[in-house]
Every structure is written in structure tokens, then in C-alpha cells.
Image (cartoon, rainbow, N blue to C red; front, side, top):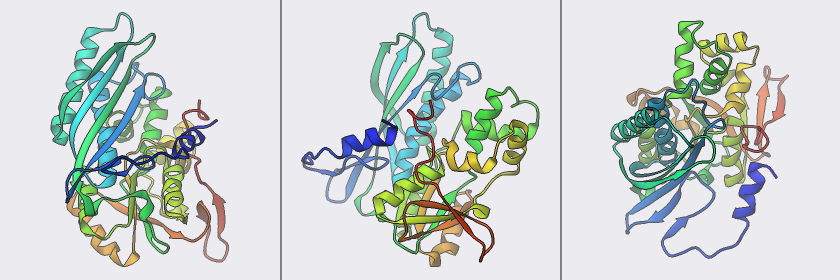
Length: 333
């Protein structure tokens, strides 16, 4: 059983929705009605040592920030504002107190930067290695929530930022090549200290121009496939339009890897993937510019099946199926 099959085994179980639950399983956050106009957004993520981070090259303060940021990214993916954080920490025998204090400082600093508050949690002994789980609560206007299921045929597919940088940074750190060129610093920073696109997500949701959105945590191939599945559509993405930083191309040569593969399957970019009518592109570009973020039009939603990568010039184009080829906790390990 892979990760997707496990999740589907939960979503296939028919259970009555409690009063106030507008959406349970199946998106970046659960959506709970707060009152006639507002909803609460709830999400949870876990980071496990040797699966999500390596202490030998991940500074504890930056790890504390990352634990918060990856959860805040789920709130941003719906267009909301993060408010409250609960932290559960699993600590191994004989853990380094100074390392743990630095981690805690990173958690609190990230909460301050994102405007949310750490309000509780749990601390337990771990039989081996550190693990950290955060539950996050956000809030937003009920009418503005952006779900994965809202995409429409003909929508342009957009992504924010550059893709594949976190995967490239991880590859450099793992191969001990991160310090060989100054240009690699932006890649390692993307893995060690990602930034959730809260302002951009909120502005996109409030604009009324966007139909569907989620964050890129498992790679473009898998995350866009989630939008396709939820919306009952397919998508074409064009290889030449996928934003790849020059530093990523350099890193790929050093690591004997394919930068496009990192963008499609690497994961942990925590950028936003969203769909909107093509006529809004200029307005969306201006909105993103006001948030100091670049966005890129990389594809189109259609009535086909799944995500397909289009390569080549018009008239000689080839399509390669890509759906759910990103990171899978069970397959990749």
C-alpha cells in the first residue's frame, strides 16, 4: 500500500459530517464554520528525523522555523490567515538540551513572523530520533476559501516562485556540495528554511479571480494531480514554461541529476499552485508583484486524464503521463 492508497482508504469510509464541518478529508485543511461569515481552517503535519530532516546539516533554529512554516503553508494554500499552533515533540534518550532550546527559539520566532501564537501541545519520549507534529488553526472569510476542487476546464495553471529548489538544496547538502559555490545558498535555504506564501495566498483568495489552489509539498506532478482528481479534470503542463533557477541547473550538473525532475517530483517547495481563467493573467501578475513574488503560467486544465507533461514544438509535441509521481512516504523509502 502506498501513501495515496492509504489516504484513499480513509476517504472512502462513509461517515456523517458533524454540524459545522464544511470540508473534512481531501484538501490542505479541514474547513469548519465559525459563524455566518467566517470559517476556521485546521491542518496537521509531522516532521520525522531521517525522513524529513537530517540533524547533521539542519541547524535546530531553522528546523524550528521549518516545522511552523510547512504547516502555515497549508493555511496559505486555502487563502487563510494562521492564528494558533499546537506543538507535539518526541525527544530521544539523552537529547541535547542546547539543541532543543535553539529549536524552540526557531519555533517561537516563526510564530511571531507569521502572526500566530503557540498555545499548547505535548512532549513525549521517542525511542529513537526526534519527531515534531504541529496542529495549526487559521481563519478566513467563508466565501473566499480556495479548494482543490474548484478548477475549471480552460483555466491556466500557475505556480509561484521557482520549483525544484528545495530538492536541489537537499541533494547538495546530502552530497556535501552545498558550500562549493555561493550560488547554491538560495537552494539550501529553500530546503532548510522555506517560506509559506501567506500574503500571496490571502490576496489570491480575496481577488475572486482564482478557482482552485494548493501548496507544492510533494512535487508538481503529485500536487497538480490532486487538483485534477478533486476537480474531475486533467492538465497539460509545458516543460519549457516550468520555472527553473539557474542555480538549480548548476546544482543538477554537480549532482548528475535532472533539474526538471527535481521540479516535478522533488517536493518541499511550499510554493502555491493555482488555476484561473487566462484573461486574468495580467491582473494576477500585478497582484503577485505587489506581494514581491513571481508567478508563472505553466499549463492548462482540460477534460483529459491526469497530469501530462508536454515537450517539443507545436506539431511535434509529445505527452508524458505524470500523475502522482512526486514524493510518496512509502514508495520513496
